[in-house]
Image 1: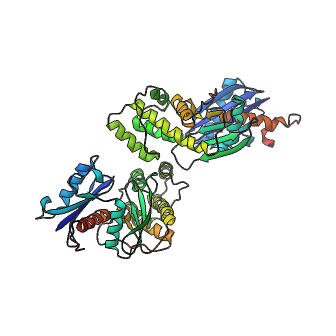
Image 2: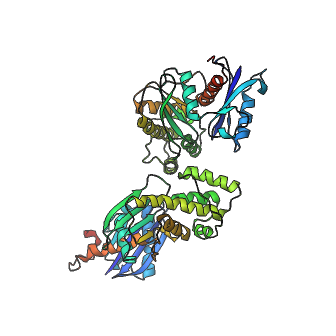
Image 3: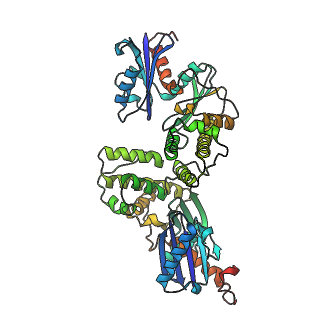
Amino acid sequence: MIVAGCDVGSLTSKAVLMKDGRILGDAVIRSSAKPWESAEAVMQRALPENVSREDIGYCVGTGYGREKIPFVNEVVTEIACHGKGAQWLVRTARTVIDIGGQDCKVMRLDTDGTMMKFVTNDKCASGTGRFLEVMARVLGVALDELGDMSARSRNPVTFANACTVWVQADVIQHLNDGIPREDIAAGINNAMASRIAILVNAIGVERDVCMTGGVAKNNGVIAALDKLLGIRMRRIRRYDPQLVGAIGAALFAAEKAGGGVI
Amino acid sequence: MITAGCDVGSMTAKAVIMRDNSIIGSAVALTGHVSEKAAIEVMERAIQKAGISMDDITCCVGTGYGRKNVPFAAARESEIACHAKGAVWQAPTVRTIIDIGGQDAKAVRIDNAGKVLRYLYNDKCASGTGRFLEIIAEALDIDLAEMGDLSKRATEKLTLSNQCVIFAETEIISLVNEGKEIPDIVNALHHAVASRAASMAKSIVVEPDVAMTGGVAKNAGMFDALGSALDTELVKIEHPQINGAIGAALLARELCGTDTDSDTAGSPARL
């Protein structure tokens, strides 16, 4: 049976189609203001050739907009989906860090994927995807360029403060002072990492650690976080780390549908 | 004796000239990028209003974020000490001061002599500071000075669910898109900033009377919102924005007053 997971986040929507433990199709799009439209669009885009929406036997919805997806059979929390998806990709994962567009979650998993505990920050933009988004805009670079700029920096700047508003003002000041963009970008990635590290340390580091969500593609943040946590996190390479929540949702769909093949 | 206080904040610079126990001149100017320039400019304007010259000033105390850049200051004092001093001078019954500045917020508890008993300070998070109002004013394309009057026209009670300035900005944009009225949104914003400042004040225990100082206190909507967040009626002081500079001028008198017999008392350089 073909199953699907649909993860409608605040910033991006993701969909994954699976059959017998294999990913048949996937898609990532930017979320619109209407979650049901985003869900519809991303599902359509994820469909591989020769598969139609009617072929999907069971679909699980997750993410910020999960209650507003019309076509799902069931909804599951993002936390559970990210845990599930991460452990499917990295069997040994015990600590999963998921950075969303406007939140940050850290989960501790048992060996069998059970959620032991989790912490989340959705109160403050610092340490969430929004922080990087704001800074990339001020810096005048694309969000996906920001990560690799760290490697080219020789003197990363340090920010006195974590607040997105104050860092934004400091970035403007540094630009006016003629500080190289790479050094500012590296400072931004480091600031992001130290904010995440606070949350991770609140739950405790247990190996293996892996990171999911779009920020997991930012090499600058990953390297800085490795250093701060004193470990090397496991990289998710097989699939886009942004898809992990949708993969988890599809895995739940397979279980719920009674396929039990995964 | 004529003394002066110069309070260089992140957004505005304030100067006050006092003769004996009364204000004879004051001025407020935007700080801009060079705080030393702002200090000189605002002091010159205050002097002009007082009808005196720089040489007539016995002693000047600098305070605020840019206090190190007040070239003519004989001494520098913290904003906390200056606000405390200024507030009891303006309203002797004040025991708690809430100062909302351009980039920070402070809650100060004082005794009847204006001595600081406890204080708390936030400059880590933009929420609860004047910057919150400024960012939203920009997003709504309205004048910061108009916000107080605007909020008075509010008819529907709205509540912002986000405290973070960045998230609140997005929330406010969606409220506008939903067709909510600007006065209602501004009113909700005032309550959000006030609740943030009030929760800080509560952690040092609020003792009446409570005064609000800083430029934000001129915003009548913020003033009322803070009163309602603290569930008390705030004391209205005459000069909230120059309160820190008044305190600095009073401290200047204390500093130099002890030396009035000395022939060098007039020279700030010896301090």
